[in-house]
Image (cartoon, rainbow, N blue to C red; front, side):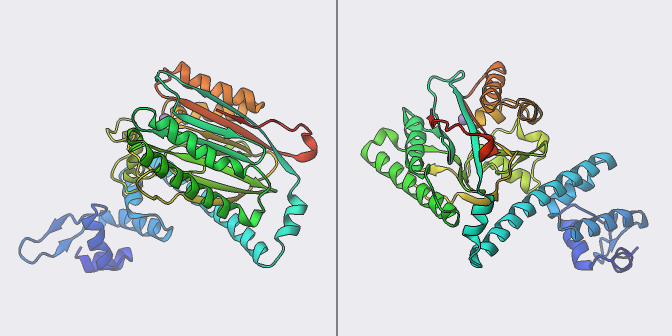
Length: 366
Ligand SMILES: [Mn+2]
């Protein structure tokens, strides 16, 4: 079939067909060496229609390629995973939109009074593993949870993660829901300038940096700030969702379709961070606003957990161990049992109705 005939039959434009050829998504069976005309086989129509449907779904081209090169059941699983991700993102955006609509129409205060009777039960555990020092720092209080994983020579990593946690600590107080993201953003800026001051005053600290993943509560609203490769997970209705994206080289290669999920764990640059809090540059953190629901469970962890323990085992502990303190301890123990090559820090926090939990837990830092 000529490319014109093929375009008509597949309902793809010739321009789209050229693009798909360049991306190795759908290549003509033959290109005439003299005229340059591109010829397609009728049997390729099915593949072309699949590409067209996946485009209508909004799937990025790199991901389409990955679906098209797999056998049916694997392609189906890949598509299902893509759609789960879209739904999770849409739901986070829906919550933000609903919050902003309420906020702009002046219902913010009323909304929080009606739904604000939530509190959290939390616990933090951290272990040094096979390293010489624990460069992870963490804070867990009634309104603020934070994990930071420091890096840098000498004591740089420890200093950086501790300084950033210190800069966030004052947030563990009543912050109005409408100011959650501003408060987090400010605290991160404060933390960055603190890192700069420290690095200027001590040349040995030059090049230090840290990740940061933190949650800040106000009523039923939840602000999340994230930079680096520590992670936050949400367990809701028995399902576990990773709600942060790693700012790593491998994640970006994976997003662009340049490597497959199987290649991540052996990639030579898997620890290379694209963004972190560092003394000599300003990288923007991700900020999200979320709605907390009673029964939700959050996990914040450093990469010492998710680099060492597979997602399935993490999910199993989160779903089956009801006490947050036990769950955090079990997760850390899994990483240590697996060799504990890195510092490992876990915070587990359960969202409960305030009347169901009368205790006032003391804040804990590591
Ligand atoms: Mn680490």
